Every structure is written in structure tokens, then in C-alpha cells.
Image (cartoon, rainbow, N blue to C red):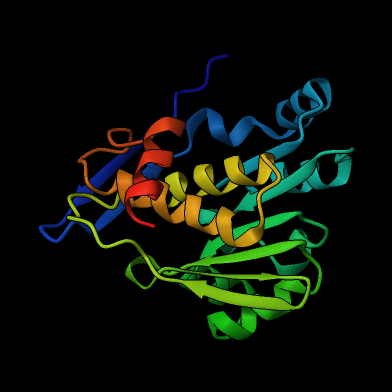
Length: 208
């Protein structure tokens, strides 16, 4: 109440890459509400995207039977490696991984995987790299006509977590994430191109 709604201005370049200018607004006041909501809902997975450090720490401290999935986004500058200790899933891009760990993304991801269940590094056109239980592998990105990369990371997260919630193997979860991102970047805007499950399954069938 009395706090402005969060707003983001997205500047899209001709090649589909983008920069974002954000005002967090009410998103900066979620610390108590987020943890209480998670406890009341008792979900299988709680996904935190670009959540402030206070929200992340509150959820991690009060987590119950649910798995906590974290995509630190721009908030990574306020976090340290210990904040993600015990997370079930960590989803981040190369630069976020390097900022968080102070190491190259590959070594940084290995360090994070020692205290998290699954670590995924999203690498844009180079695909995505997954580490879990001492194993690691990379899958390539799907080749599509890129219109706008805005929301690609969030789409990846949604596809990946949807597959996780179905109990799929790690490699299949990675395929779902990459497919969701590929569908998203073919449309302009942050929401256009977000796939339904049927659309995602159809895309995967056509690209097997």
C-alpha cells in the first residue's frame, strides 16, 4: 500500500540484444510477504527471480519441504556465495556467475555446485551448462530467428522448472529450458512468445 508498482524500460538493439532500466517499487518490500506466502502455499518449488537479498535470505532461512530455485539476476551484486547455500536449483548467466563467485563462470559454477543441488549457467547462443551431483554437461541452443532476447532467461527458468516439477532427468529439464527460451526470442516484448506446455512439447518434437 502506498508504494509504486515496479517498472522496467527495455532498450532493444537491432540484433535483438537488450539493456534494461528498472525501478523496483513494491518489489523492494517483499521480505516478509514472500516467506509467509511460501509457507502458506507449501509448494514443491519456490522460484525467486531477481529477488532482493533480504527476500532470498528470508526464504532460505524459513524454507520448509519445498525446493528453493534462485535466478539472482541483477540482484547478484548484493549477494555472496553463502546466500545460495542449500538452494535446490541455481539458474544464472555467465556474468552473474562470475560476479557472485569472483571466478570464471565454469570454475565459479563448480564452486556453487558444492553447496547447491543443481547449478545451470545460461550461455545465450552457446546454450546452457548444467552441474549436478558431480556431473556436468552442456547442451547447445536451438537455432531460431532472434527478434528480441528480453525475457529469454525467465522463459528458460520456466521451462526448466516445469520439467523439474514433472520429475524429468536433468538433460530433459535443460532441453525444456532451452526450448522455452528459443520460442520466446522469436517474438518482440517480454511476454510475447512465452510458450504453453503444448507449444513447447511440439517444438521439442520438431527439433529432436
